[in-house]
Image 1: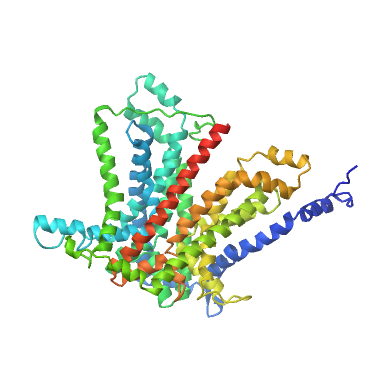
Image 2: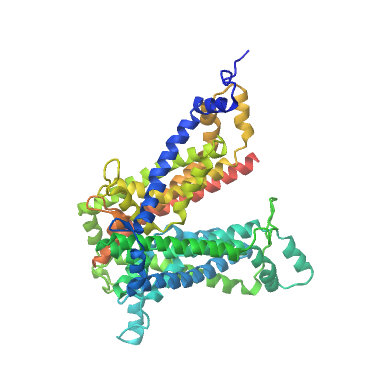
Length: 576
């Protein structure tokens, strides 16, 4: 007769503790709790606490400085109204694009869907640079305008609030497109079919039935677009700082360059407050979850609207939109990387590869490329490993407190990148215990871990919830240890989610700018920082060349992630 591992303990609580420590779950839980504390809670505490400290005493003076100084108050207001209008543009483009691609008989759905979400894989800084090459004072469109209407100023100014709003809007609409497209695929079409049978027109069906059903997804995508807009640094920096138009992120950057850390901490806390208020507002506007609960768990085939005579016009409109907001800025970026100087005539004698040669001949630029490759890989690997363990303890291990770690790990997802950058400086410039990491490359690694922890948690949790408990229970009932069960059953089934999470984190960290530009130092430059510095210093051709060199890495990984996701979907369908 086999003796129960809890036999030495008559007290049930003591037996439970023995089980937890006996198979290592509690030891693992303690280690992961320490990891989450050091990478998330401790830095955030530093930001909030230091924002109220003036000369060693609690005070609101830092916040008074934000609002009493006109430039700071204006930056807060600029962040709000610019982000609201940019979000409206994103919602319009993303929602209409999702409806057309998912619910009409438009051709080339796969290719159009890929092109629509392509800006999601392109860093906002690159988009801003591309639009400068297109619509800047000597951009391609500006040169074409002067060729047709004569010399003189063009009737637009990309270096303005209008330029920032436009580029933010066309950069963030994929967030709305993805959420709305997913909701449209899950909507049960029986209500639409019933209305159509009753003689209701297509326009009214879309307005009164389909649109309300996907309203939560529209609000959800709008929330993501708003948070992304108010968090963005690259676009307002490239298009706004030259025109003395500041938002919160660029004012925080300016405060840190002075330096004025107390002011930066106060503005960081305000930025968090704005993001949280926006989240609450969007959730309230979204309404109750059961208000339009007709999305069931059964498989559905959404109704397809036949465009008829309007199909050529709709196709033309979609293709034109993609050409304008996706292809044109990328083309301009590539072309600029080969021009001898910015604004040079588009002739063969003014084309050159010297900008690429300068990149490879600059040790600091090569170091930036290497740093980004290593930091992105390191952050992705660490996060995939640790977040998978947290999710496993929460969902499969059922260890008390693991759910709290999961919730804490999601907090940075709602935090603007500028706040994370300030948190890293405060936490690791002079920590109470251990070495000071500020000024080293390790602080960038910690910053990426904090910022992208939510990505790993989301992908690993989503995959683990699809693995039925009976598989592990059957293995353990057959005599397999918990470790062998995890190794031979759970891990192989979890692998698709781990791969998708690794690629997603790598893509995001590879060209990260908002956090990096606040905490980089000589020797720890990254690709994003170098591109921004060269663009800001007037080396437009070199900045474009470095951006072009990084695009293939991003696009290949993005396409690999989509291919792998579809491969796993087909495999699951075959097994189902």
